[in-house]
Image (cartoon, rainbow, N blue to C red):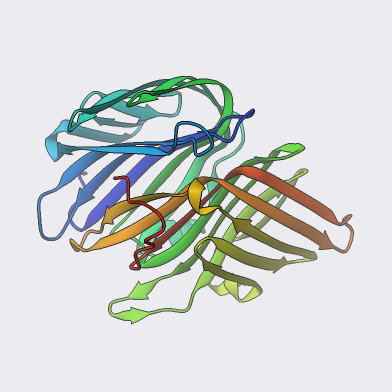
Length: 317
């Protein structure tokens, strides 16, 4: 059954260079607004602040040039495609061009679900998200303008977001392997949802996996045991789950952030500020476990969606 407006969907992959502070982020998005023309967009973002600089490109397509399927899970827009095993395609806008051809080796890690099964089926929250693979391996190449990344053994993720509207304001974080703990991962969001015109208090959901243990808060009711406060570009958070206490922070340098324009299903516009080169620090403690400190140095993803323009970060797409 084809989705009806209002509806948006994003299928994306992202990965980090294991040897340098570089990262890639590719998105295929659908937008079915309540007013305006439906559109399917191909996005390419390259993070290389210490080298050629950050780059971003978005190519819009008519909605009839897209084909999104759940079985097999695949998204096609024009000549671009994202699925669990590959991401390939090209884009050309205003004299600029990009092309990419990536092979994805699944990690075997189970998907990361940030909501309960009931939450995925319910109308609230209006935005749903899950990670199909939190520790995938990427090989191939990506080109944007005159910059080319040779991708060999980069670690990243395969992701899926969808819903009736974007969460009005949020901070989103993801770690695909920590320094010295490549099999550990984090998915976290501090979001301020809304019911109609009513804005709700911010709530923090998270799934942290380390050393065979999972610390998870997936329901709004359980967020009474979590906290999260963020601003551009610093975020502190914590959770008490059973006998485990988790405290952490994610920070990003402004030069490591790409600014983007996002259109919501009501036709309104928001600002997205994303860094795939953020640093995450986690402190884990509790009865029966040894105190643990983990760091992911310039390899975490940190994204803020806001109505406020951050003038120190250029909007690249």
